[in-house]
Length: 223
Image 1 (cartoon, rainbow, N blue to C red):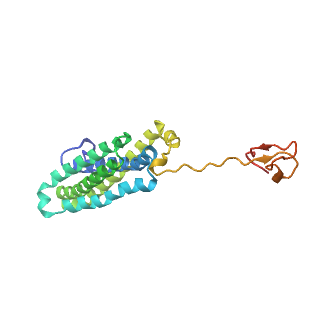
Image 2 (image 1 turned 120 degrees about the horizontal axis):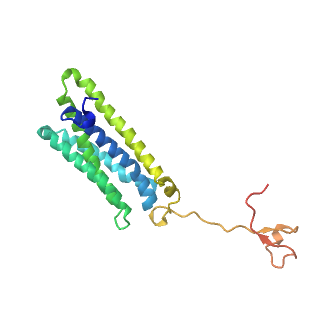
Image 3 (image 1 turned 180 degrees about the vertical axis):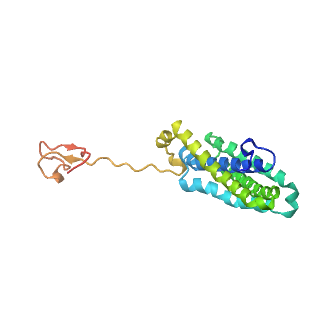
């Protein structure tokens, strides 16, 4: 890692740090969005996944937009704009926990966030090569990838640990499933009567069954 990365020194170190912050925070937040939609808003896993799938297209669109030659002079502004979109998407996603907010809001917010990621990820790579000497381009590119991967691991682990420590796993296990939003309650069947007398079972349900023949719920398990 370039010297001064962890204190966001001006120039190359801040580019490497920014790459890690952008990638780690966005991926860590994205890992909880489907869980939130399924457990708190009652969406099916398929719909929750599709609400984020459109982000792949907008991510590619962001990468395409920043690659236009006429925008090269605005490279720093593109990076700033991308980070603003990423931060706005992360801040907007929890709003769907409010019942009055439609669930599609998170899909729209995440589409814009992915567009911002397309701007940021590609722009940081371009900036790194622009700020690196030819002999140091390979070393600095490796540092950029390390920052990307390390931040993903650390922020995902920290988010998962905080989620478990605050009782998130227990709440997910006991979360009600709404049949109005993609979940269907399993059909319930009344326990079948079981004859407890020595007479044939078919005679237990007939009117005027023999004396001593009663009906009872079946035990939990039978040999």
